[in-house]
Image (cartoon, rainbow, N blue to C red; front, side, top):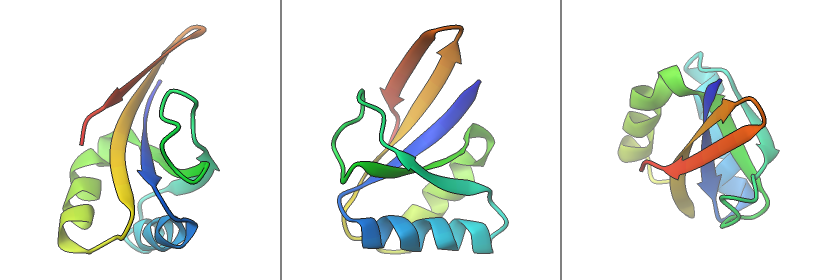
Length: 86
């Protein structure tokens, strides 16, 4: 299973970003930030990895104050790997 965690410093930016993703038809949710990321307000956006290009484009075209990074999370059984990709 592969998914993205998009981390922000502020909840306002996070919720605005998730709302915009949903307006563009990208399924996203607000989740607790994984410990491996632990650089944000405690909540992050979660989206399917297949939307990586659309998400990068959205972040480049709009100014989201407090954006910290995109993390790729891959699960293999009980093992979770988290890697910063943007």
